[in-house]
Amino acid sequence: EVTEWRPIDRTEPFGYVDKPGRYAATLSRPRLMRAYLLEQLERLAGNYPCRIYVGPSDEQIPPEYIDDAPEVERSPSSRLPRPSLDAVDDAIIDGEWFAFHGPELPLFHFTAQRFDIACKRIEHYTGLPIDTVQKFILFTNYEMHTTEFIRFGKAAGGRYTSLKVPRDGVQMPRYDLCTDSGDGITMINIGVGPSNAKTITDCLAVLRPECWVMIGHCAGLDGRMRIGDLILGNAYQRRDHILDGHLSNDVPIPAIPEVQRALESAVRAIYGDDTELMRTGTVLSTDDRNWEWHTPRALWSALRGSTAVAVDMESSTLAANGYRYRIPYGTLLSVSDLPLHAVPKLPAA
Image (cartoon, rainbow, N blue to C red):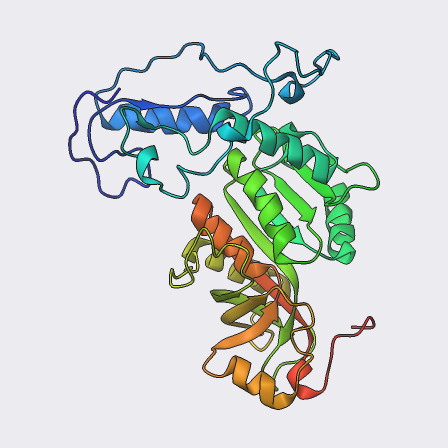
């Protein structure tokens, strides 16, 4: 309960409210989110006179969401609580009116059951327990990148304490290069397409990562490009359609300066000051894998007026969902084909 509103340091990145009042949330797995919750509440309580109340909620936890729960009878007549999609939505994230104009204002981004089902889906899709997901996340859709990450992880020392690898046969294999404080690196092979990108980020968002970055391949649109050139996305043209119901296409998805600088520094650390290797530009993401299978005239018409230098299928979805969930995002792609200049994407590339 914020008992008094007052102006605070305007450079504060979070921990501020618009008015006094009661802010509430039902939290699931507080131990998993301990560091995040402490940081948020300490900042809030330091900025305003507050009273903080903690107690049990009247919301029962379905056994399906409890790790190591004993097997129980799942019958329609069972008196046990059952998972309910009535309690799973993104009203707070998507800024719905009633989420912000009720007697209690939101204190966390998600409901408890939304958190629980996301954790279960992360474990199902990625093949590892939820508690080893790290704060910095890399997405890819190529096994060559996860192979290189495993090689790097096995050789890493210093603050890194372990490398977790998934069981075989999972849909989106996840690899966690862990630290004691959880600020290591997670890499996930999300497969191909904007639907997969939305599915996994919808779930990972509940863990409040520091950032997520797409490391993938793209089609280059400029005849001066070479296979292997790097594209640092600084704008996103959304033709993936997967988030149109949540974010209108007239909402700009900006680049995150801190992520851009970090990626530029990383490329410079590996390749030196050779600026010919990398360029920045707009990444166009499509939901059509065969987008280039058209006549030159049709492609000319489709791309007319676009500033895109690269085409892929996931980057705009990952950026738009990062924007939507308030999680920093970025994209670093390698040119694998030049379809407008008679170099289509083939397996050898």
